Each structure stands twice: as C-alpha cells, then as structure tokens.
Length: 241
Image 1 (cartoon, rainbow, N blue to C red):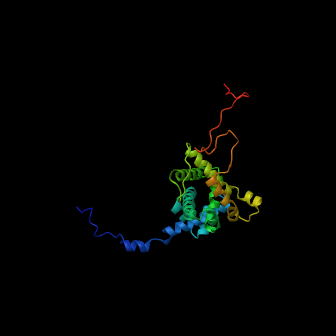
Image 2: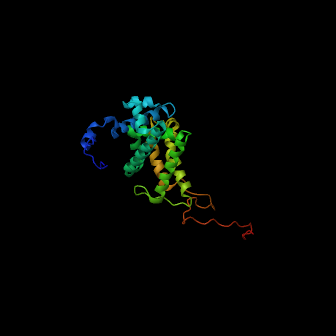
Image 3: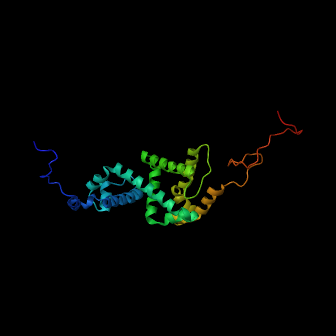
C-alpha cells in the first residue's frame, strides 16, 4: 500500500511559488484600503446609507472582495469600530505630553478628524454597535483610573464605573456638540473649538470646577483636608436634640 506520507507526486507549490501566485487583492494592504474607504463613507453618510458597492468603488476593488475580507457589512463595520477606536486611543497616548494642545493636534490631523467623525456617528447610532462603542470607551477610562495614563493619575472613587462614565461623557461631549459649540464660540471647526476648550478641560480635570462650598456643607471632592460640617444649634447656643 502506498504510504500516506509519500509526497513525491505532490503538485503543491513551494512557499516562493505560493507567494508569487497569491492575488494582490488578498493582501493586508487591500484590507486596509477597504477599511479606509469604509470609515470615510460611514463618517460622511452614516451606516444605513453607506453601501458595500459604494465602499468598494471608493477603495478601487470589487464588492465581492469586500465580502471576502470582512464577511458582511456588519463585519466590516465591526472591523472599522475596532480600527478607529485603536487609532484614537493610540493618538491620545502619543500626544498626551502636549497636555492642553493634545486634542487640538489630534483634531487638526485630517485622517484623525475623519475617524472622530466616525466615532460620533457610531456613538449616536441607536444600534448595538453604538452601545458597544460607548462601553468600549468607558472600559478604557476605567482602566486609566485604575492604572493611570501617560504619567497622570486619577482620584480613586468608591464607584469607579460611575466615575469612568462621567469622565467619558465629559470627554465625548465636545465632539457630540461640535456644531452647537462652533455657533456659541464663533469657531470655524472642531480643531479651533478644541483650541478654546482644551485649557479649560485640563484645568477642570486637574483642579475641579468649584472654588468654595456653602458654609457647613462637606467638600464634594471628599478631600480629607476639608472641614467637617458643624452640628446645628438652637437659639440659646445649646445643641439641638
């Protein structure tokens, strides 16, 4: 009987031959082109109105090749979500040393600006994708609270998830309210808006917003150095029961 290990008559190509015969459309570079085109389309037209055919045309490939790489429109969107979130997270870490100017630099980059537009579309979309994206963002902030970020450390809370959600809302609101802010501040675009807002946001993160509290009220920050509230007294000066 012929051995199952006898490959003497096998016609399998060698590694170099396989590499030469592989279609260039199956390369990671092609997938990257499709992702770039999809992110731009979703950011501009939204997820419902964007089509596989339109994305394929913008990427210079066939619709079948989009399906080959990502399986479906939903699969493509999930890949875009992950790609955009990673890109924004890495960009924030890269520019963290510029403090108040960090967000201005991020928004001034056309490629990042498109990704942020995509982020806003996703967050405002009432689908599971939008919720997944927000949960992803809150998870990231919660990790920053626990482990710090780019040399910054955070106050610790008894409710870290609530704290993370609050910070996430504060961080995301300038982009969600971009048009309202431009009208209110007279700015031309989101990059210019962030130039105005960034110093105030950084000050808010570092120092809080309240400089004093009503007499007798506890410090809302929970600082151990804040004075304890006094017990109320009656008109004769004695303690009330």
